Amino acid sequence: MSTVISIRIPKELKQLMDIVNVDWQTELREYIQRRVREELMKYYLENSKSNLEKMKVIDNAELIREDREEK
Image (cartoon, rainbow, N blue to C red; front, side, top):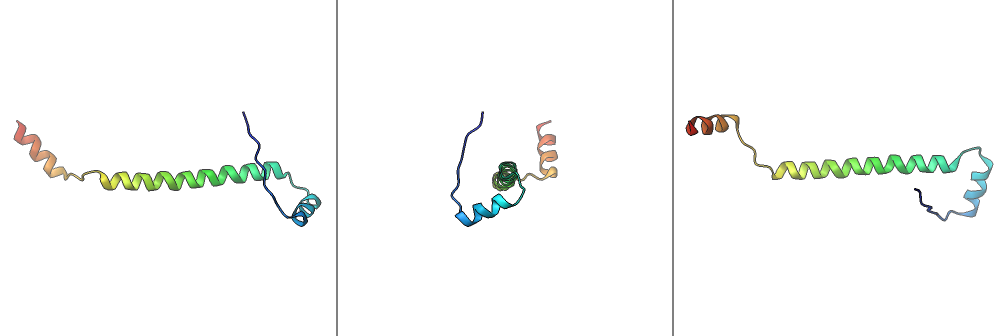
């Protein structure tokens, strides 16, 4: 399923767009998809960093010590 969005551009720009031989629908769709992917990557990276900072860092030696003490 798809949806329609519209943008308002200057009349002069539309006239210039009509002169050049470009499939604007495809161009704009691909541009939007690329930008959404870029922004999602930034968003997920920031969330990952935030979650990583919240995690407690445990030293391997501490884990081994705890394991030996339990035995």
